Length: 298
Image (cartoon, rainbow, N blue to C red; front, top):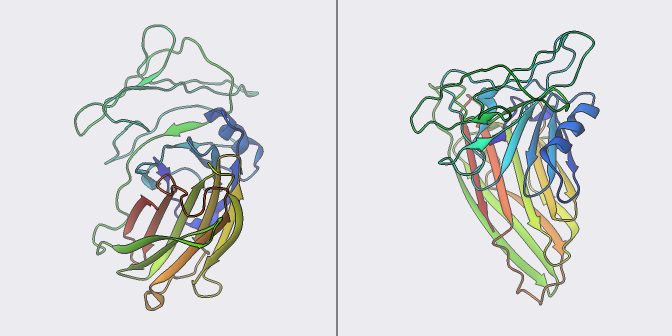
């Protein structure tokens, strides 16, 4: 699952984590970031995205082919509790294959006051299990905790989101990904897209796999000035290009189609570099509240 904040201006930064890192590393990143209350751990890319707003289960959406886990970290609480939360019209599901059972251990950091640990349905004696029921509802059972591990107090939530405004017309977008090779060892991956209405929120990630020592070169966009911003992170596994709208700004329908582009060097043989492992993820919200999510490869 992936987290779609109420306002994308709550985005803090992307933290690039070491190879073979774990979910706990992203939790600690959020702990040491003073403003972080929600984080998204991208399992395959080893990237931790952090946000300032309190976690809202209705802001969590399916992530398509991208494996990601949402972390909700509540700060400044007298009693710190780790729990799995569901809301109306919310279905608990796993981050990988929905037909399997995922075992998740939720634990807390000791505080100066009494610490309460809440766990969900557990297998005998030691572990906490989240079970996907093959129906439209999810049943949760709490039992006394038996063993815990001290990590930051965080709630890991995996759920589907509901529309903000069910009376709002569904926003739809037409998106064209493309790849260009202007030089033997230089590549451009871009998206051209148009949507059916103006957007009050926009968020896009393009991820480039670094299988041939790909190195960041440039980032480009055609949004109107002062409406969006962009950033890039390069780690040992990926180059991650990000674009998102600024607080209070509207991506105007009259500006479509818009264009985003990530440029990079590589050491593959000419244009033979395989781009099918390079992915993109886009989420948009219309001015009346309709939300749509798209993802794909280049």
